[in-house]
Image 1 (cartoon, helix red, strand yellow):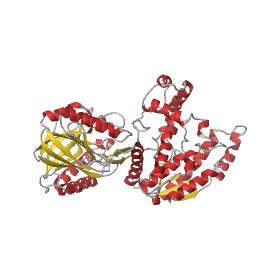
Image 2: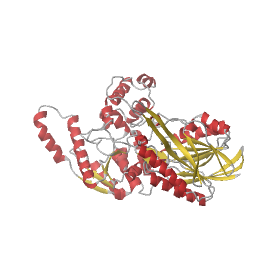
Image 3: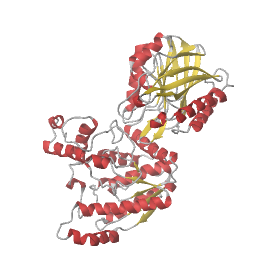
Image 4: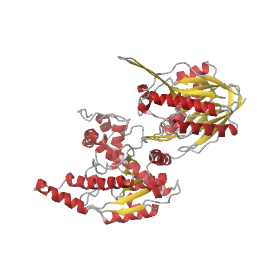
Length: 554
């Protein structure tokens, strides 16, 4: 027995059914010419993942149906080829008083112009960013189809995280499991996937071929890295991550003794994976939404420096513009370092002083503020002037503003509504400050996209972080040291540990209680923040659904 399987690790656009169908057709033709007789495409490949409430529109489902028919018709002449495509099917049964859901997250096996089998996903995730029970009804049964004499059991993503669907396929005669997936990236997720699929392989006694989506979709990024696992759980091959690839697995041997041969992309360090996730997230958000470029406020600080480096790697220098907007409190070294970094990366750099506008605001408010000391009010005015200037440039020239706030700031409210939070896409919204420093050091030591070595001036990394909104200000005037803050935030926000648990780990009670309070009282800001890239298992997006009004603080 010999079968070549092509894992079409492709980047789709949600709602572009004709374009997605064309991408599947082209990949299938190339794979067939290369000897493949089974092509696997990712979960919901016809419509892209995740289409959210588009699934509720009958016209959307009808367009998906038409695209499946197009794939079948266009590939009808390729003898012996079987293509698995993911797509929604069905709709709602409505009456005047009730709506009954009959919509399925499905995959169809297409061969020589016909749909041979259609399988519906059984296990519908409803945690983290997933909301599949809002849209779909669980499927039943199993799906086993034959290609070149090999019985292939089909599973869809979450199905393979549970034992029962795989065992049902094995009991139905499957000799190999094919799993099609759209599993969002977060740090550490790749290893977790391989471990789970190894468990399924050992339990069922069958090899597993895992096909995964790649690309950015709003806040989530799909990292590719499709792979194959032998029946004993051994990793047999792995595709590159964060790029499209037609990953081929050759299956040989006899049932019960199948051998898998596939290329093995090297394992990568966490910072490299995280960098690629941020770069892909920026690239696809800009490209898929048709923005001509991006602009950002370059302050001479670490956060804006990191965002600039990511943007250039994602889009190239010609699509990135920076604006330095000095205030009365901007240090000379901030000007120098901002100019130096822009020069190193070759991006457009402009300077617009906000001193005249700041003085005008203070003069206009002098009567109202008479006798009152300057405080955060004047600091926020500066941030909001900068936000207005950046949004004006965005409106005039069409480029989207990238905000530069990190997760530590988002968590504690160390950010200004309609100021530094003003913009269209928050690149490092899910990156803690300590990780910002780690990524900056990693990028200075590596040039993965060939846009320039050591792009971030060393002083930007080593100087104490400061918003520079008052004389001699540093972040640690109002926040705990970032090593302490981020450790508490990781436990409190990402792991749901309570105040008492964190204190028991050795953290000072007053600091823990203060951080927990800051997280709680700044929810109203986060609700108004721009969308940003999710790179942890608990980001401030769909993962985080906390009330603005509430008193629970433990």
